[in-house]
Image 1 (spheres, rainbow, N blue to C red):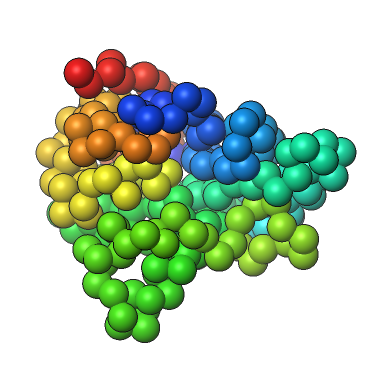
Image 2 (cartoon, helix red, strand yellow; image 1 turned 90 degrees about the vertical axis):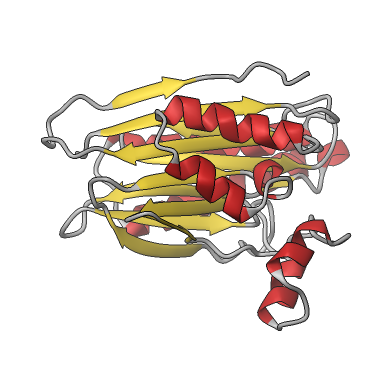
Length: 256
């Protein structure tokens, strides 16, 4: 086990009435899910996903375990929609990191949809995940810049989500678990409001993870807060492996 410090912050935003985001911080698994489907359905989808993925936290994890558990979550969301016709079509993004037990310590970074994972290492912030969205396809084709994609009318249209049949393909990459690294896992309520350079600046200030998580959410609220916002900030500590795992959670105060 690595020693980590974690901050979790979430906010319903300025426009939405229900927070359809869900998040989980464990000992080795950290996940954000952004539900969709209207009424309470999006909340059900995201909560179902994090509850199932939380089971991974009980024992050592492999990449195969992650893929199988994400497929299990997809089946559960599909079955819920089948059993509740009025909420059929519910779904959710998912993004997270999990410490895998395959050789030297590595993080498995995984995602479906447009929730994101960023890594700050040696002063450089890089987005590790790739959005599964229409605007990302336009960016990849050179039609849009990243700045244009943030304000494009189709920016919320995603091309993969949990809740599909057949199951969506999971993106998963392995990244060394290096002491000193900082990780950000976030729903698009942050990234659709706050540009990457500002996210990078706030991450690099090196306040505590809970304080950084709060500042990121507050920045999204100040920029409009048009969606639910959920962020996890995680620091890999330069400590002995048996040092106590640290988790701090906070719900930031509303910005007036």
